[in-house]
Length: 489
Image (cartoon, rainbow, N blue to C red; front, side, top):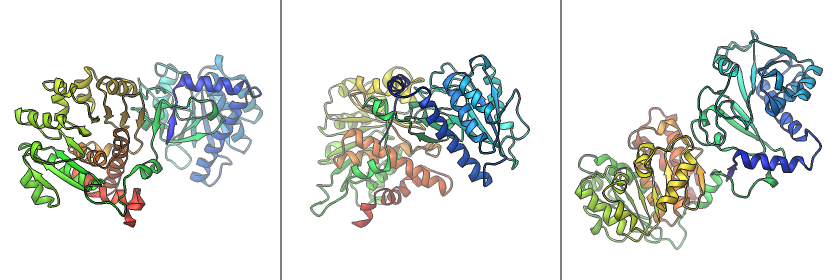
C-alpha cells in the first residue's frame, strides 16, 4: 500500500524536517532526483544527454527553484539548458545563479528545438488554475518539436501545473506531463480525479519526509502485493460452503444480460458456490450450469453475501426482491437499480438494515444518494456519503474511489477508460459479491474487486475492442496472473 498526503500535511512535514537540516537541503535533494530522471529520459530517447536541448518553464518560489537547480545539474553534463522565467520578480535567486554559473541561458520564447520540457511553473501551494502568461504558454507545448521530429518529453516538477493537488480537480488549462517527479510523498491529485492522466508516469523521489508525515494518509493506493495477501485461496480443509456461497439477485426481463454478466463476475471470484435469484434463471441455468437458480430471493437458500441491483428494474417485483436482500443478515453489494430504489421508495427499508453494505454508484447514481454530484473533491464526497449511509462507497470513475464510514479512502490505480462500457459494472458487482461471500471485509472486498476488475479491463483492451463480456472472459486469466497461488491448486 502506498499513501498520498494533502498539502497541509506535506507542508508541516517539510517544515519539521527543514528545522533539522542546513538551508536549501530539501531543494537540492529534490533537484538532484529531478535532474537524474530528466537525464535518464534523454538517454533512453537519444542515447545520451550531451548536446540535448532542455527548456525550463520557471514559476516563482521553490518549485521554480527545483527546476533551476536541476537545470544547472543538466547543464554541467553538457545539456543546452534554457529557462523561461514566467514570474521574473519572484524567481528563486539561488537557483537562477546556479543555472547561470553552469552555462544555462534565459529566453522569452520557445526555442526551435526542444528535446525535453521541465514544468516548474506552479508548486503544491498553487490554487485556482494557471494564470498568465502560463495560461497562454502551456496550450502551445504540443506545437514544440524535438530533435527527432516528435514532440518533446514533458516532465512536471512535483505536480502538473494547473491541477488542484489536494483533489485532482482540473479547473482549466493544465500541463499534460509524460512524467511527474514528485518529492517526499504522493499527493491526492496524482492518484485521484481528472488530474491523473495529466501526471503521466509518477516517480517518487525520497527527500527524507516519510518520518514526519501523519500515520494515516489522505488516500491509500493499493498495490498488487495487497491484493495477493487479501485474496481468499482454498486450502486442504476447504469445501464449497466453507469457501462461501454468493447470492446474485440481478437482471430482469428487460435486462437479462445484467444477470449473465454479474453471475460471470461472481463465478470468477473466490466463492465456492453461486446462487442466482431472478427472472433470468432459465438463461443462467443454460449458460452457467454450476449455478443454483431460483426465481426469488426468498427461495434461494442460505448465502454468505448478496450482489443485487444490476439490471433489476425499479418496479414492484424488483422492490420486493431488494427488500428481501436488505432484510438478510449478511453483507451485500448494491448496484444500479438497487441504488435508485434505496435513494427513493426504499430508503426506509435500507435505513433499517444493519448488515455490512457496499454501494457502487457512478456519478449520477451518487447524486441520487447524496443529493448532489461528487463535485471537485471526489474523495471527500465519497467519505461523506459513506459516513452518512454507514456503508462502504465504491465511487466509479477513471480513478475509482473506495471510502469507508470511518473516513478511510482508497484510490484504485488500475482503472482504464476501456471499462466505460455498458455492463462492465455488472461484472464488478458480481466479483465484489463473491469476495464478500468468501469472508473479506467490505473495505477489502471493494478495493480488491476494483483492482482486479481494472486489470481485466486493461487485458481486454490489449486484445482489441472491449465489451463487458470480454472483461468477464479474461477475469479468470487475470486472477491466475495476479494471485499465483491460485495456479498451484
